[in-house]
Every structure is written in structure tokens, then in C-alpha cells.
Length: 283
Image (tube, rainbow, N blue to C red; front, side, top):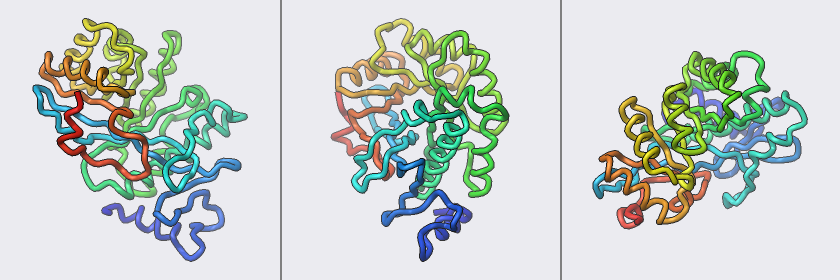
């Protein structure tokens, strides 16, 4: 590990009492995973990789990023998905507190493992867009600065927003940009993605692979994104037929395909590696 401030922080968490101090809300388990407490729930991180599959029959399945998810703690990574806790938080202040705890856990659990050039994707819950009443991203930036962790490897992923929320999305994105973060946006389908691409110009745009019913719109999205240096990631790739369609787009346009899904990976606490050649050539 090359992050000395993080190493020192983890050493304190891994001290004789494993508490990191009486005020700490974060501690380590026997495997070195950072955990945190939200009311009566113990949280930790699980990561699902985003892979790139080369065009023209050269699918190397290289891992280019990992998306962090909050999970209830389990020794075998079978914990429950806890994103809905934000929906059920009693107040905006509690939702902000939970979000900051999750971002801290994901950052610790990611950077304590990473040894190659990959990014960390962190979703921003829709409730947080309106709950934070000041400079979005500044509190998270301060945590990263204290641990001396690079913020430019982190992509903050915005949720799908409605047309009348556009002003709020732009306000939040502007704050995140000023704090040095890379930005991702979510789109319901290819047409929505095209509109957002032209309006927002993010670093990354994520589209549900199950909603690719518009072939013309998908091809236009991939062409325009490539022209602007914007990465399109197809999420929820869960069966070979969906992946075959993505490969068809990549082959036709001569572009790599960035994809994420249960076809290859379930979220795990340990960062995933490239697939063996035999597994990467799923069709």
C-alpha cells in the first residue's frame, strides 16, 4: 500500500482494542475490512467491477473501475443491500450522515486493496441532491485529504433525475467539479443519455443494458460519447443475450464495450481481477 496516512489510520483501527479511539465509528474485522455502525446495523463495503471488452473479437475483460455498495456485515459477503436505508432515514441530517459514513467505508476498503490504475464509482442517492444545503462534496473531499487519498480516481455517480430537476443536478455537479471529483450520470435509456450528454458533459454516463430497445439511439450515443471522450457504461448485464447485443454495437462501431453485471461478477469485499480468457469470451 502506498497511502501512508491511510496505513497509519488503519493501524490505529487495528490497535489493541480495535476501536481507533472512543469517538471512532469505524473499525476493522479480522480480515481487515472496515466496518461502521448506523443505528443498530453494521455496515461494510462490497465492490462490483466495471470491465472493458475490446472490439473486433478481442474481449480482454480488463477491470477499469469498481462500484462501491453498502452492505450489512457478513463474513461471507452475503450481507443485505442497504441503499434503501437512505430512503427510510428519518431526517435529512441522518441521510447525510449515513451517506458520509458509506463513502468513508468504501474509500478505506477500496484504497487499502488497490494496487493498479482503476477508479472507484460511488452512487449519490437522490435524497442527497436536496438534503445537502451547502457545498456538495466538500465534506468528502476533507476526509480524503486527511487520509491523503486521491480524489481524482473517484467518480460520483448521479441518479436518474426528472426534467424539472435539471437545475438541481447542474448545481450539484458544479459543486462536485469544483471539489475536484469526476462525474457520472445515470440515464433511463439511450435517448435520455444523449440529452444529458449534450447538456451536462459528464466524464461517464451509465445506461441500463436491459433498456437497449433503440438501436439507432444507442449507436448515436456511443458515437457522440466517443467523440467527446465520455465513457458509456452498460449496467445490469445479467445474461449472454444482452452481452451479445453490446458486443454487436462495439463491433459495428469499432469501440470497446464497458459493462457491469451479474453475468460475470457479484459484489464482493475483495476487489475483482481480470477474467480468465475462457470466461471473458462470453457470447
